[in-house]
Length: 237
View 1: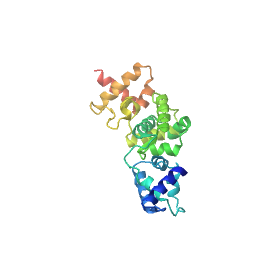
View 2: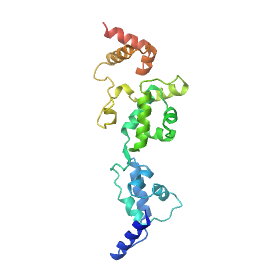
View 3: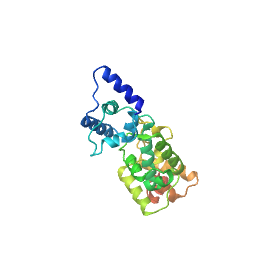
View 4: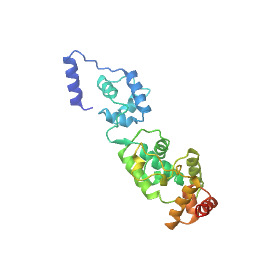
């Protein structure tokens, strides 16, 4: 907070006989944990409270023993369910990272192209963030737009990423349309409304028509090449 803001607050509280320079540190820490559980980062909490971006992190340090009443009141006023200024819901970013993983693009691959730390990408991809900074959302979206129609080089990392995504049932890019991926109410189109083999055949036919080789098509759809061929034969009967 600025010196002018603090001085104004102090004078007003003294005038009303309510001046108490110390806030309840325990209550503030409890509220910060509640905000974190709701998906806010400590930086987002600080900014939403109108404070220095490092304030919440400083308060949570074990060596911090007190907090001013002004800072305490500012943090306690932050609504856990309000979107912080400069942030957006994380769901679209999470879905994009999961979809890229379904193709085999690892968090490290996204890090190298976005500049976002690998740890942050893992946290977002696991769904542990309720909000992300607008800049983070834009960077991940740019990487997604560049990679969602391509497969990574076949490496141990790409195979492990693809296997993890399959185990967690993360939908691939083809399950999302460009508008719905950011909509919390949207559901991925995984072909459940039609038999799986039919859905695979339809998607495979579309990709083959675009010039993709059968091996790439099978990888994109997460099935074996023989399964694609069998599905195409059955549907064409």
